[in-house]
Length: 63
Picture (cartoon, rainbow, N blue to C red):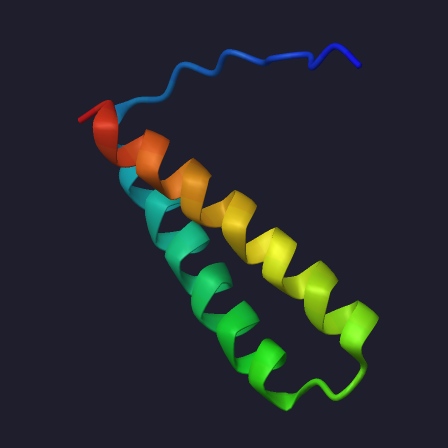
């Protein structure tokens, strides 16, 4: 399966705000994972967190 990619150009301020929003979402997901008993939901949340961590890493690497 071929992955599509999107390119996004951000100003430094936009990059900073987006990084903060992603960090907040990662923190929230960590809390949700800790409070979730449903194994399937927990795995989904962990996958989302992994994706957001990768996005944050890419945002940091473009500074």
